[in-house]
Figure 1: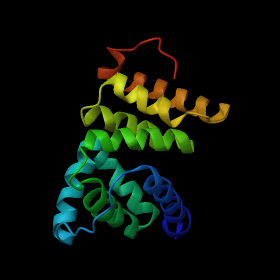
Figure 2: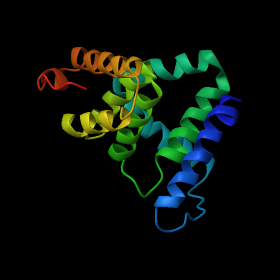
Figure 3: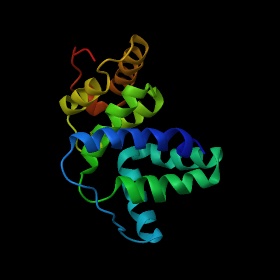
Figure 4: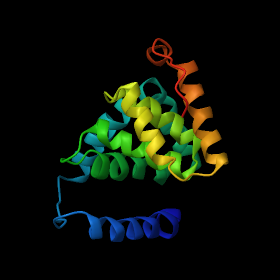
Length: 166
């Protein structure tokens, strides 16, 4: 229900704005079957979450069994693994979006996901800052906290730690 009443209206409004500024028209596509989506979604979700994937699916399933299926088949399989945009670029969009919305826990996951999908620390920082344009102090503080948590948790990030402010 949250997707329908919170996420879907946000998507509609975002697409209205995008369609005013973006050239061309969207085309309907059906890329595969449920089995294809499950397979692609599982691969992409494993890539994004790395070693946390083994804990993620049972944790989401504990919230609601159908949500775990939806996350893999629809979220990662049908939507996020579509052709036309790389996993890295989709993760950078996720970073900007989650920073803008102030979802710190998910932001940490997708900062790491962007790194796992091939994003550089600089690209990720740019996406994070883009999401914070016009953000209030609380969301900026949440993003800084997420950045520090990732720097403390991932040795690849730790090796490149910088004094750059988010």
